[in-house]
Length: 75
Image (tube, rainbow, N blue to C red; front, side, top):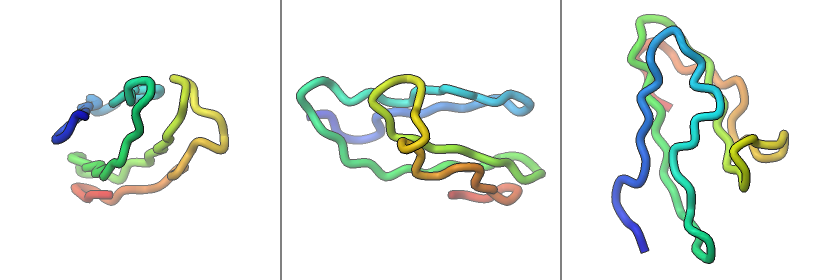
């Protein structure tokens, strides 16, 4: 079983990062995660976070939707 930091993504300022897959749980396994999202910008950003079985999440897969992170804040 994998442990430690399993995925990371740095989305450049001015892009959406839409559909960024950070980690895929191997078939036959399960995952337990802690997620931290850091806004390194001087302005607020809006995020969407989903746990999905495909690369295109369905509406019910979102655990955060259009959540605002303050400038230089952490969610």
